[in-house]
Image (tube, rainbow over all chains, first blue to last red; front, top):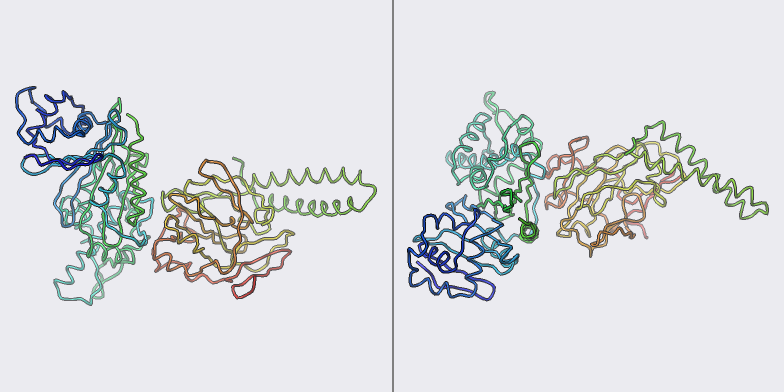
Length: 342
Length: 266
């Protein structure tokens, strides 16, 4: 299925049937693809001239920006991968590309669409891409809030903190199921460990930690080596407090200020998330520029950027941002990505 | 980088420095009023030269220690500070002797407070260590791109509270504030050139209600004695919320202290 093009002089949106990609790009524009191109898989096995473009494809090919979009997608040198979903959304993805030989600032996104088609959007300048990115993924928060996970946070501690946020929701559900609204939420220490292991292996994106683990590209490149001090960060940052149940000697975790505040925030207002990774194609292969995860809520855009720690692991830089702060940081990251040379 | 001095070396240096500084004053006055200025001028030259050597020695020996952390990048911040006492030349508000600092790109300003302990040191210069309790400057911390971090350390018998301001991105249209304990500040302009300026601060510019700024995400804190400089944002256990101390701007000289409080005229 091909949709009519919607475009201006600087922006183009079209939906193209995947079967038309070969005829339009290989036959019509005589383009070849590099290893970073999203079209490589679609064009695999396509023999030149073996298919004719469908009727609707002619309108797309006639748009003056189509050759630019096609050339950008055929041989990009910058790829910005996004995996979206989590909370109440199904998993999806879109990827943005740039070919500096075509234009240093033009960004083209592709995303799988329905009925065997691909949605393509061309942005004539970085700011228009940024505006669309923020409209799609971020929340319009204006007031700043406390950052309960300030940098630097080892990946292992981050995992424990995200699980604590989930644990608060779990404890709140348990209170609801037992009709005990006055009870302070808590989680048994053994239950915390058991549910952590289950969460990490689940890919259940209704929860925050699995969403982070599944949606963030490239996490498996880092070592994960939890040590006691990583768990200790939960007490240090006031996520969890060790206590004993009123009856008996069972040890439990009560939620501290950070655990409760972030627990309520995510329990009530977290709807979706996105992981992203920006890579540039160099003569010696792909070079990762940055990698991260965004979880917007009604109170903040929680941006987690991951940086190698130089010892195989990674350090997280979490910021709880207003829309304006996020826009500034994204503008800086996109600028750095566009300035990176193959 | 040279090694920091110890208390004994520092004390000897300051004793000699203050003696020579006093002699410098005597000689200057004597030369102005005397007809036999040549011999005095020669001694004056020697004294000035020795004072210069001592100040250089002091600047090279002032401890440079990890003291805060950037809330935007997580980078540790090291800064010079004479934590042996307020009688160090670092605390001379009119002519501070401090080494060049190596600060992160997000650094914006440094202010601070000192709660004076018992026994004020004797020194001839004017020391302006700030009020007796940690504070923030609303004009700065309200800016959307600025956050602050409060920490603490002992300075001799006193308790000091450095407050670092960080910005991301750095706004160049915002007037900064005099660096803690001095009467001016230095900054990098957009072209990467160092510039200096100075401002004034009055008690009305200070806000000691730290809790609301912590809850708003504008102020973070580092626990006293935390060598890892872990940034914190919870208020439940923040010791700086209950820090007592004089709320006015404090001045110290020759073992005497006085203050400019909020309810006093300028």
